[in-house]
Length: 151
Image (cartoon, rainbow, N blue to C red; front, side, top):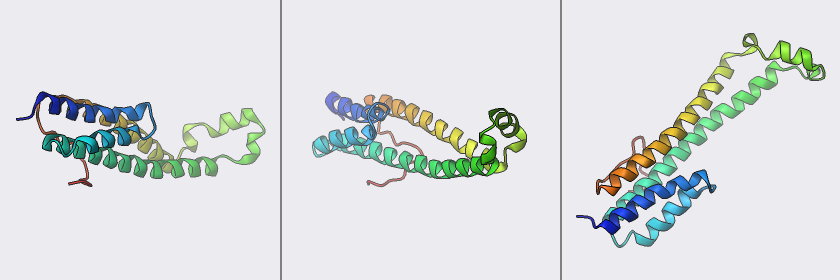
């Protein structure tokens, strides 16, 4: 049976992953700092620390893959559909190059990847909150779609 202190600390490890929205790489730094300082004192804290770090690494990898797909495709599509000589004439540029006829399948793939990226971040936020609630109740929570980097 976990003590209240262990549950609170494990919950705080999960919640510290939300610091990524305020501090770059805070979603990695703070959970690692808290987990490494207390992992030897409790198996419950050790388990939850590993879950948070695996989750953050997995979702960082998924985000990186989506960005590597979306950004180059978007840039290549824009550069291929916009002739540079029309950049001088703003009226022609807007009327002839920003319409649905000039969009291609590749641009649609990039837009889908960007939408998936946004959905991934919202899902990440909600899963962190859900894991925090489960952990505060003393349950062992395992994030879905997580690659087990640390076992």
